[in-house]
Image (cartoon, rainbow, N blue to C red; front, side):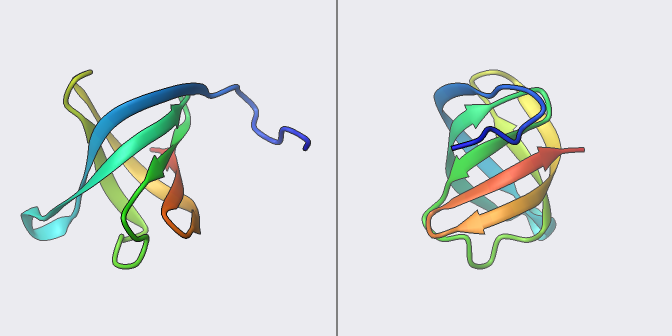
Length: 80
């Protein structure tokens, strides 16, 4: 398979939280991470908005995100 990303992503396994408007949150698992984006495991991609804030409390990370792609149980995001 050809790598299409401009930067390599580091494989990780970290607990995260998708913060959505109105104060709601959806738990997720961060599976890989780069300075430009990440892949998140989610129970279901249904209902996750196109833009949200990702929190990784163990790292103190709080980044605005946009969904780049969706699959069953996983989404790809871009920071910014």
